[in-house]
Amino acid sequence: MSVYRVLIDANDEKGLVHKVSGIFYNNGLNIISNSEFVDNESNKFFMRSVVEGDIELKKLQKLLVDAMPNSANINVIEPKDKNIVIMATKEMHALGDILVRHEAGELEANILAVISNYSDLKSFVEKFDIPFIAVSHEGASRDEHEQKILEELAKFSDIDYIVLAKYMRILTPEFVKAYENKIINIHHSFLPAFIGANPYKQAYERGVKIIGATSHFVNNNLDEGPIIAQEVIHVNHAYGWRDMQKSGKDVEKVVLSRALKLALEDRIFVYANKTVIF
Image (cartoon, rainbow, N blue to C red):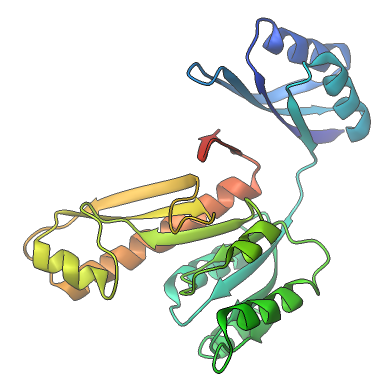
């Protein structure tokens, strides 16, 4: 028996669910779970099904393609661990949370390597028997440094996602294009928002009452890519800026791991710089 995740998006029209469920039924497939959504503003239909049965992946893919309208994007996926590379700088919290969850078997992932522009996290990463690659940015232009990283990434034949675990350098459009909708980032997201140096101190000085984090796919607009996961927590006047920073790190690591898990389980549709998540 095989299990497949079936992801479909198409222009909405009558009978789409009937067509898909008919193919499942006529080929002896049992529906383990199913989620659907129609965005009425864009007239887009989204569907994620998990099915089980005796059929080859390519045959199921062809049956669905032949039955669905030309506008449909259809992806039949056999669940398996996806290959990821984590990029970090010096901060340990987001990286550490992913490594611990991976060690505990909570993530459907093979961590191929951790790449950093510093060597600070080398001994920590190697405790998990994961390769650590230091690519220093010292004395190199942004383009030169990125080219070195791209050369390291090219050594891995199949990367499904790159995770920026508090990687504190802005990626160029060329880098983003090479891994479109495959780069997952995390950043703080205060209400109101603060940019620049020491955002937690800025937040403290303004007396904010909510702090949080946002995980998103990276595009060419800084921190404006399609949002995957968000969370906020309440703080009050008793919090100093270091207390806020500590709480903020707790939120960041949880949100990044949550976003990564959604990606690994094929639960995300990206369209119009937004996401539909089942």
